[in-house]
Image (cartoon, rainbow, N blue to C red):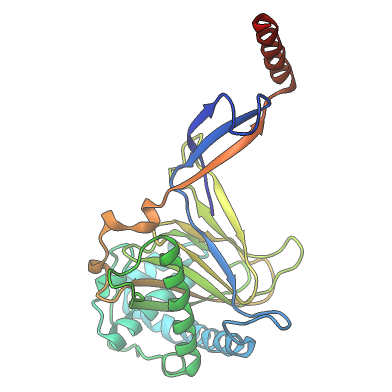
Length: 319
């Protein structure tokens, strides 16, 4: 649970059962961001949600398509669309993965007959070039894709249940889940963005390399804004075989990859089955979630001593 700030701190003079040396404090957190990090591959005899071999195969599929896109498809897109070429030339180290994601959005929309504006995230156009092929059989036709999607949707259902967001009939949610590959080579990164209109979003770490002090992180920006006293950033440590889940409205970015290897993630966004139109923003349980805590803290010694002296004087007066 990422809690960037506290509000409504109410102090009671004496905690129940705590005596004069304790203060009871009721704390409500402002706009908590509920982050889950779940190991999919169990260690030893522990149960596992996904086999290590499945993740390894997914990583190979993702990297192979990324290389094909970089070396064969992207040059065609840049030659065909001068406006996109100019935008790509001026972009930062996020550009390759964002361009790859744009191509994957079109593949997803064509395969599942989804309107492109429903997966745009930022309202940007998702073009279709006549000279580009929008098919990814190695991924969508693989048993690994089915396992990945089933696992993601199972965890998202658990997440929404924790947020007290379940269908009226009590059954599980049915989703429209878009899964896309992200591959990071040396110095690759990703600038902040959100995934609008979805129940939740996240990443599965299929392949990940890190050394002490050198490892990519997913950073969460402060939902309350950038101005002081806010503007905090939470850096989430990554590890291979983990599923990370968070609200779709939370802005995240990926720090630069500083090692000479390739990290492979499968990011996802889970919408209602009917798409973004099936999610009422006023009924978004991840944005309406409230976290409250009751803390018992010790009084400063000098204050506690003064209170005891006052109590003793009162007892003497009564006598």
